[in-house]
Length: 170
Ligand code: AMP
Image (cartoon, rainbow, N blue to C red; front, side, top):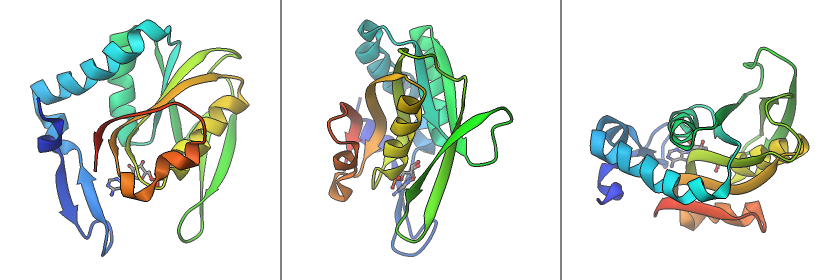
């Protein structure tokens, strides 16, 4: 199955000059969705994963499906101000300005093995900050993964020595 054929390029969204990688054709196809989750599940099943962490909002979709497949829990990492309970936060640099993400302070236990998942890695800032959140709670981030990697932005460099895996590369 060629997963790339289920990713739609949408030029100039959300602003001029950005080519948005739209995953909705992949989500809308039963076989493609099942295959993407199966690839991830086959990779992480032997790794004794305790939690799959997903990043708001498209990361949630894949993280929840993967967690179900692995038989473990799912942890949401959200934009600031959305999580209701006690949180810790990380602020990171964007091209213009900063962004802040949060995780519930009790979302993972010290030493728990976590896979961190998002739909797209662009500059890597979001996944790097999310990794710091999880590590700040004492989790062992086993690997950072995403469906789509925009290799020309070198986002994985921002993750340092952290193991990284993507299903589709551009
Ligand atoms: P970054 O922190 O730069 O790696 O940005 C990652 C976040 O922005 C991810 O959660 C993506 O959903 C989103 N994103 C960035 N660039 C794109 C793109 N070209 N197409 C789709 N989503 C994108």
